[in-house]
Length: 506
Image 1 (cartoon, rainbow, N blue to C red):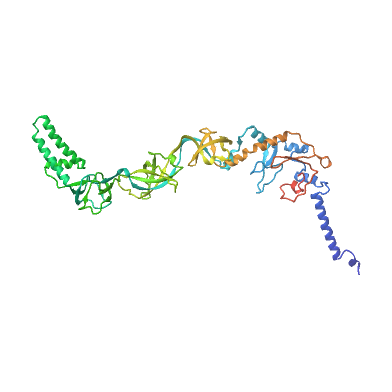
Image 2 (image 1 turned 45 degrees about the vertical axis):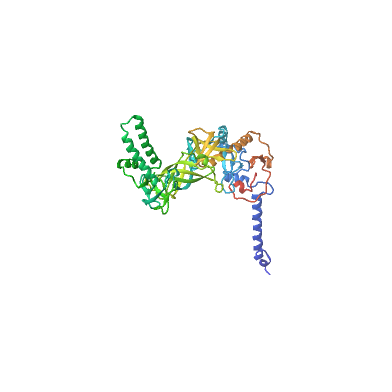
């Protein structure tokens, strides 16, 4: 064997040198960055290259560095962008990867001095899409929408009957639904009583004519007989025109024409009326006046309180698109339906041209006034916490103030404000939850100002280098940590050389 074979120049030597290089590199990396012996071998190099220092954010820097940062704003702490009660002394990210927002000392002092007012840059306000509405006084109305169907007006329905015995000899109206005019003839009836009364009237007229020049007592008695016969015919619903014609012609009518007392549609007709014997009280015809119809609608029991007789309603029909008819509440039934918990309301709807028919369906909208002259704001501007209601008042110039208000009735996207707001003030209707989140910083700011004014505690560090960190957790508690305490943690995504150096000072 040669020397080259027995020495370390062969494959074995090459492998051993490779292993030694890897082990040495790993040991140097471990000693340099993890610093298990607390020697800080890379601090001076990091300070020269990237400006890193292991001390806290509030620790004093060198004379040259102090002059460089003298004109910069002092960062008091960093806060979670979604929850301002969560803070950190160093830049960090939340669970969604959003950067913490820096809170500067001058802004904190100004904000705390301004009470509950939040000041935001106008550019940020525009980016947040902040919209406002003005609190105005108006009649707060409550829209009630329901449906119903048309029926005949019960106050415009008449029944045709006779007040004497007789026989129907001829019928002029034979169909149900046929329109008739007021005074139009319906049927002719023969009644012996009518014929006898007509004869008595003609006899009384001739008798009074003979006593025209007689003494007053006799003349008045004769004229009284005439008036008695006329009244008897009138009580039997004989029209004045028919009586006048009887007196003018002097001829007794064998049959008398029964006329319609009102115009409208024939709702009911006695079948087989012609030739039928009629008696007093027999219903021969039913006639309904359709110049006005009733619209029957149902409203729930909690809506009845806003509907009164005489209230107006808007009525629309699908048969006549684009047309709206104004109706008036005529009657409210006294009994509530136990099955549907609704109450029936009758609305008078004008029908002068006769287009509307019984049974047509309609949509009805009531618009009663809940609170006249109420101070109203949009309901979307109210932040409800369960026990109280808060609105964000825009004061102009990027300044906003959260204010508690007392609300009343709410309807149609508007809310009545009883106290806490004045007419003419503007309230935020969008992004107000972000402004409310900003206002919640008051407690955190106060805690930071109190902590900044308290004396800093001395902490022991490596080689006399004293450092302290003031950190805030979710409860606002302060923790003092020195450079000599190193917490073992898993490597995180580096945001600066400080975290790349093993998270010193945490």
